[in-house]
Length: 564
Image 1: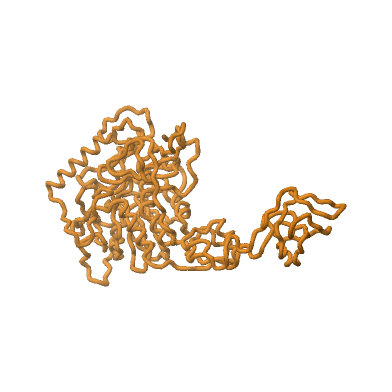
Image 2 (image 1 turned 45 degrees about the vertical axis):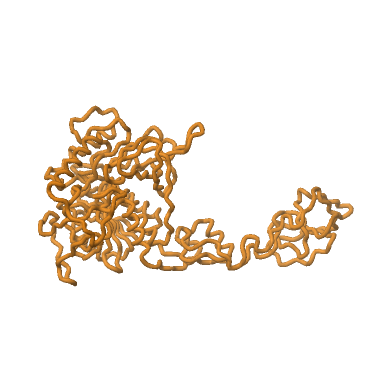
């Protein structure tokens, strides 16, 4: 793997797998880092192969040690108990810092040079599948990720920034489709074309206030009556020295000098004269034709999200329907035999946390999302779901690592999918992936099974991909001060839930890292309004870091003290 700013070797590079000595040295380094960081937040290694909600591992790590569910549970319990004493487990000892790095992600393929079962076409690999063109290998009832005949060396995963760029570029690979929707159905879509005014705004000179339209210098003679009202036809020319009552929005008569507000006028009923209490300026309180825009003038550019204000502007400018990009259609497939849809966890079964979360999150990103489909650990069901989907994007949860029940890679291989991203140098969420099932087929984002690791995959790959498909412009990154020291991974980017806080006593606004940030935890992200992008090695308090906003309102005040 490489750090977030490390080099990326593309096809045809001269990368070669490290030799045995290099591998042993790297393992020793990783082991030392794990112990030195005094881990908090739960080891992510036990859930990477699993399904939503923090799946128990069914695989061994690269050094042959069996993952321990009990060890993970013990560590997670310690993360939620700030007063817990020291642990005898060297990988579970916690730092004095309230939000240190949890150490490692849940990917058994954690060595610097690894093997994988996937022989699907990949943009980052130098090897190709050996099957004859046009043939699809049969899919076994149970995938065999450990089969040496299918194993091959892989390149280091791309950096976090590069993975996001690949996803964004994939989403913008072709011109977006265009549909026309009536105004009452266009909210939240993205304009496929620039919005030009179909008329002048306003389309005639109109009164900005209730009052009197006057012509020439005063005092002005007037006639009793209702005067000029909004929505009526054009009025007759107003002669000099005369006045007429006028309502807000009414057409101003030709040759009108100004409009005098009712409260600034004195009416002499006996003499039939109108006097101004203040000086009168030519053109005051008149909205001239074309003041806001002229017909044909661009109002908003293509790529603008249709908000309620855009709908109002479009209606005022003469539109009944808008040219927009269709919402990306997303299918969500939840993998894992151990997941419950209701009730309390029991007998080794856990609640599915990702199914209820992903639909609303993807809708907040502008997608049209089908109901999540639980598939269990069934390679055949997964393959059938992928080949029958008519979505633009398929999101899977769990099954992206190399355990015996992790079917995503073998199924993608069998379907001849193109792997665009296979693992990312980010924690949590290292074993995420992005694939395209066929040149004109849907994309697939494979999320790790641990909940916060899945959130990481969602923001790293799914968000920029969907923005591209929907025609949304790329968001400019911004930075904020972080109000604490945040430990980092030695090589990878780290995403940490944060909440924005106002500065005190004239200080600058900042973000505070939230405590419950283990890969299997949602307590921190539930209180967060953003994720801090922590570079390899971590940051000191007072350092500016890039912030990823979450697509909902900022965290509420009660979060302070409970999560920080």
